[in-house]
Structures are given as structure tokens and as C-alpha cells.
Image (cartoon, rainbow, N blue to C red; front, side, top):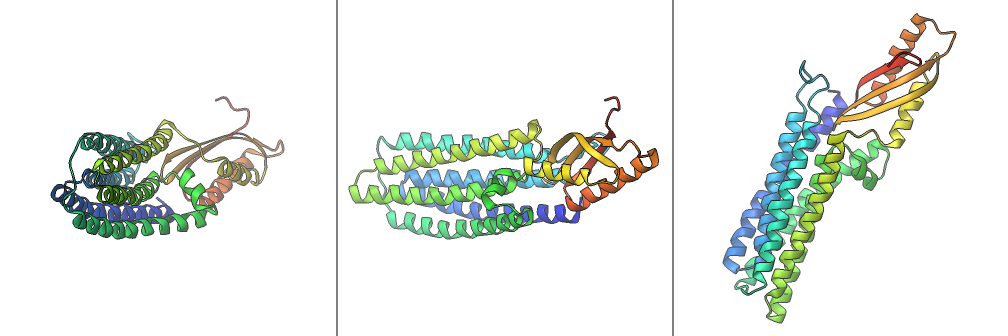
Amino acid sequence: MSDAAAEVKSESVITVLVAALMNLGIALAKLVAGILGGSAAMVSEAAHSAADTVTQAMLYIALRSSAKPADEAHPFGYGSTAYLWAALAAAFTFVAGGLFSITHGFHSLRGGAESDYVLSYVVLAISFVLEGVSFIRTITQVRRESRYWKVSPVRFLRRTPDTTVKAVFLEDFAALIGLLLAAAGLALAQITGDPVWDGVASILIGALLLTVAVLLGRANIAFLIGLSLPPRFRDAVRTELEAGEDIAAVQDLLTLQLGPASVLVAAKIDFRDSASGEAIERSSRAVEARLRERYPMVRYVFLSPWGDAP
């Protein structure tokens, strides 16, 4: 693994661990407040934070397992395991977080009343601060990496193959929104005296979690199926190849994202008619070296002269 790729992975690991530790403490505090106060929204928020903690543990496993070096049985490495674990984490969020919160919210619509609003408000306020710390850490990483790739943070989040960063960002963002929904539900229940608002907040929190789970699930499944580099980077790879000595054109170019920090490039190269076999070999080595230097995530490069049998 290149130094740049290792640095990105290390930062992702720290981001995931910070988020997991924050959510573990928050989940316990919300659960206590929800049980003592009788708030459905607080119990749903506890389930939300618990689901986030488990999914972040899965994301940590994803990062560690995807870093295993290639071997004879897996010649292209274990990068795709990151997407498998991240997809499982999204499924867990869908079931344990989203469906539980919605179901619990509908049950609470039938009755029940908050008995300790102060405790719930205090827990929500502390949770918001802690979630904010984790979110700021994630935003810092997103901004740094988006500057490195010279794209906007929004575009980076849409395109990044490091779905663990995307997962932590979306989960932290959803956590902050969920806390606001829970606070609004409690406030309306307290003001109106109608506990139905607490149940409505729980349902909305569940719907929010389902949305996040679907977005993350789709992103990881796309990489598991096999996703190429974004058009901008495919064009940049083509330009780099065509700049090679004795290369007339790139006829076919295939790219494949093997993992968060691993890309395969395969191309059919139209070499100049005057190029000798030795010149073709020298040019191929040189262009491969430049490609790896400019794009450290390019781990495998396969170049074949145009016209060779497939």
C-alpha cells in the first residue's frame, strides 16, 4: 500500500473509532433517560446511537480486513471486503435502527407520557455536543481529502470509494437531525400535553435512519458489483497514458475500483508503427510508473498493444 493510501486509511480508522466511542456513551445515556422519562423518542434515539455504534464497529472491521495484503488465493487483495462489511452495516442500521424506531413510535402513539423532561433535555444537549465533536472530525477529513482531489466536499462524498467516510458523515449528520427531532417531539408533547408528538418524533427518526441505510446500501452494492473510476479520473488516466512516448492513442480503457485505496487499470494501446518491441516495452514501463506516481491508488496496470488477441 502506498504512503498516501495508508495515510487516508489511518485517518478513516481514527474517524470511525472516534464516532463509535461517542455513540456508545450517548446510547447508554439516552437509554437511561428514555426508560426513566418514558419517552418513545428518547428510546428511539438510544436505538439510533446503538445502531450507529454497531455499524461503526463493522466499518472498523471493514477497514482492517480490506488492508490485508494480496495472496495467491486473492491476487487483487481484500479491498472489496470493505464494501461487504459496509453493506452489512447499512442493513443493520435499516433493521435495528430504522424499523425499530418506526415500530416503537407507532406503539407509543396509543398512550404513555413523559415524566422527566429535564433529564431528557440534558441528555439531548450533551449528546448534541458529543455528536458535534465527531461530526467536526469527519468534516475536517472530508475537506482535507476533497482538497487533495481538487473537488468540492459534496462531490467528494458522492464519488469517494472510501464508503466508511461517507457512512460516518451521514450517520453523524443523521444523529444531529435525530436529536433535533427528539427535542422537538418532547417540547411539543410538553407544551400541548399530548404524548402523540413524542411518538411522531420516533417515527420520523426511524424514517431518517431508513433513508441513510438505503443511501449507504446503494453506494456499497455499486462497488461490490464493480464500479469504474468517475469520468473525470478516467479521462485523466487516458490523458496520462496518451502522453507516453511512442503511444499514438488509447483505444480501450477499463478501470475498476477494487477497494477504498486500490484501482485496476487495463488498456489497449495503439503504439506508433515505427516503435520497436524494445521501445514499446520501455514506453509501457515509463507510463505505468508515471501513472502510479500521480495516482497512488492505482495498484494494477495492464497494458496491451492494440490488435493483440483478447
